[in-house]
Length: 125
Image 1 (cartoon, rainbow, N blue to C red):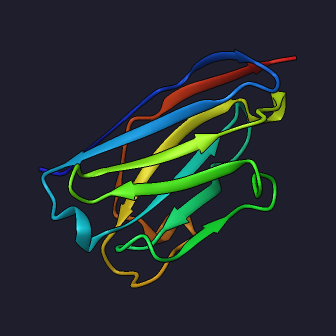
Image 2: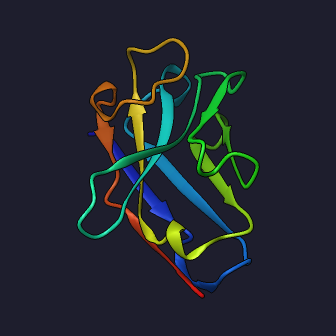
């Protein structure tokens, strides 16, 4: 059984930093590209960042480029999202996802096979 568990969310002020973690189990982690998505109230789930199986390729949404960094530790079966210079518009539930079909990085939600339960990030102004 594949399980993805996000952690690290919370309530912070604008300009602060947070580091999200997603621990994976029940899969061969290094075989999966990983992604982070977010969903704000009343909005569709949107792509944030993605990383390839080896970590050699990454991609970011324009709204987070230069502020967020995705990374992974295949030995720990964990993917991270370092979020700096947070803005109120970053407020959302953040989800990690795993994709076994894509050799590079994937930005579409439909590319991903498994999803975590999400962690809330709230940024106050």
